[in-house]
Image (cartoon, rainbow, N blue to C red; front, side, top):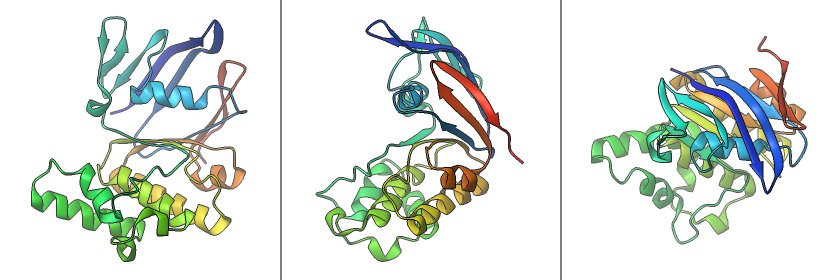
Length: 220
């Protein structure tokens, strides 16, 4: 059970974003990705999620080929939850409706079980009937994370999930992430520039720079 990237390369308009990137994302062992702006971190995340295609290389998810010249696994079949820098909650829905929409296809007992688990984990029970425009930045980010976790993904791809939050809110969001990784033995790719985030998440740290991926430090 692992996401394996093998020699992934990507170019845009003749510009090489990265070349021959190989990486493993294993259950319960966070991977932190840092590097300068424009280095291709978000592009790599989108490729893993199935939102973009590499020019070459292969991605395997739990032994199934997700990207190759002759096959493409749809994003919703990859068992991956994705969160970008902005919360991007649906403004016309309250918090409970934002969450319920994600699991609308499940039977009622499973929907209720997931709602209870996720709202308790993210500590958002008091927010369920509030609308996004009434939430603080930290609250909105926890709700956005809950919307990913209620799907109970095997893997999470998080693109700077604590950006523009104060230190206390950052720590709270990261605690939720780590609790889920531990509880569900989920795989995690976490993009961040913040040294506090990087230290709190732990795991293996990689740096993407000038088109190349390098291991900067390993889990202690």
